[in-house]
Image (cartoon, rainbow, N blue to C red; front, side, top):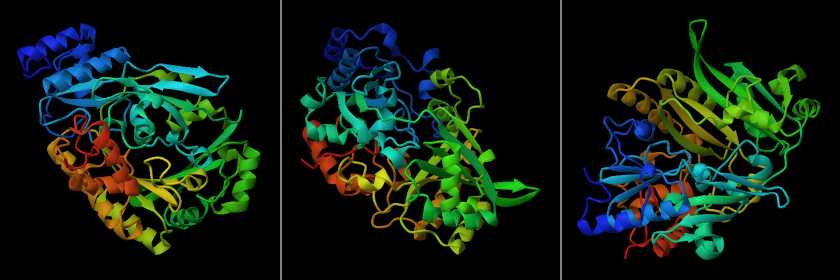
Length: 468
């Protein structure tokens, strides 16, 4: 098996001189490494030669220098959002640099800022949205500094890396440019009391309400975020569509009920449908914890391995009622794939599409996440559900953004273009690059060409350098 130190005798000496401590090195056979390599939908996915789990920033720097000198592919994992598994599989001999130990958070109450280590790397580096995006925009809209290890092993902050690289890692996918160690974030205020609700509607009534939601959700008060889950379900032995409206409102229930009555009365919200709570309790609510669960549950890092596929789209013109009913019919025929509709508008429409690499701002009513999960591992099972979601994506072509058909980097989707282990040309990279980044793609390529011209930091959908 290829390892960092088996490529050549010279590189073995160099890597040993870097003194990466033994507790941070795992082999695929280690009991501690099971969760680091499980979860791919590929049968018997290739295993890494080594998993490096750094404890400090210098460990990260050492791992980068060592892998580069050994000529071995380095795959970077941080806090999630790698839906298609490109951070831990490769056809080349490879090493995983798993950042899960770098998880500290340091808050400065005086300046209302915080440094957050790489556990949030997958979230922030691809854009980072939450259910306050209509009020405050994306997480990357509030990043004011960062620390990164570049291809030479240097540890740099915003001043040292320069504004172009800083811009690139705030929404352009950090793993194309280096290893992000931490982000400094400007904190935002939340009220003492927020309000949540969850209301379910089934077809045919669901069609009218979802149709109306399209004209309201991106224009209503910026304190209000209403997500819609669309799922094919069986009720009384009959297949139908269920629409679930889930909300976070930055205010109390009385104001919310009045606001909804004036703007979205069709949903029929009543005060008894609402629950008031603190913002941190709303995080638990949105994560589907039972009411009354301790906030300490958010620190639990254990998770069950399941199998899933995600895709994304942007809707720029409301879908007609006839169109929605046609879509519902196709969803029922397919079986299990559902939608998550996330409204935009508000702050999202006020920020320039060039301010960060994330370009999907004004003009987008809502984003669609296509979602299907399954529990049983097997090639036929995988093919069935992946085929379902791909067909639904195809059916949606007339209803979504065009030229290009946009996609969200944090719903990583290798269907929209890929390369062999990141050995990508500019033309290959542009296939998926313009979908994720639109007009910002060439600027990202320019940054990549400057900071990593040999394309050491690469994956199947990384930013390519310009041809040499």
